[in-house]
Amino acid sequence: MSNVLGSVTPVRGIADRAHEVGALCVVDAAQSVPHLRVSVDELGCDLMAFSAHKFGGPMGIGVLWGRPELLAALPPFLTGGEMIDSVTEQDAVWAPVPARFEAGTQDAAGIYATAAAIRYLEDKGMDVLEERERALACELTNALAALPYVEVLGPADGCDHVGSVSFAVDGIHPHDVASLLDMRGVAIRAGHHCAQPLLTWLGHESTCRASVAFYNDVHDIEHLVDGLNYVWSVFHG
Image (cartoon, rainbow, N blue to C red; front, top):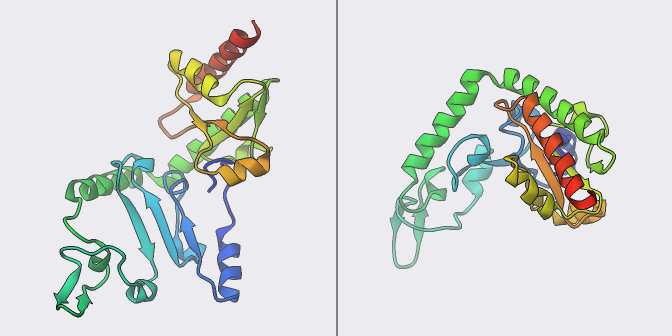
């Protein structure tokens, strides 16, 4: 899922095409895992990674999944304690997967907190959360698109957005928009969202981005719209 466009990428088709030419398919699922039920079997990917902080876990830790036979063939790129079976002056025997990829002392607290965050979402029910968040994203997209000075990026149909909606305010820099909204208690993201090539292709250097999760409601969207009207009035009052 794109963290800029809020749209879901057809990973299965991409994975199948990659495999046809002998390539591997690596999926960045950081944006989708918090909002959608994700199945590596359905995606058909070879490797998948996602971040814990995106779904309520701690910062600085994430998850890498890979096909067992692929992980077994990969050499480690970090070395340290607990990732070897034996070491000599000339050679080393790596520990089995996954220990070979976890050099040094593990982040036990982070691992525990990540598992707790996963259990929390699963207890709520990912299908329930997805339905609620899709409805909120649809409401958010339509509310932003109704503002004459706002350009919404991504799918024209609001119901095709999941989790986030990127937008530009005519003639106002995204950082100015974010700063003024922050003064009114509304938090958005402003910048290139770690996706500069995509934004360049879209004709933008940076954009605003509003995100919704299951803990948001329509009142938050109303506060955002009110805040944007305030931002517009500051520059065009």
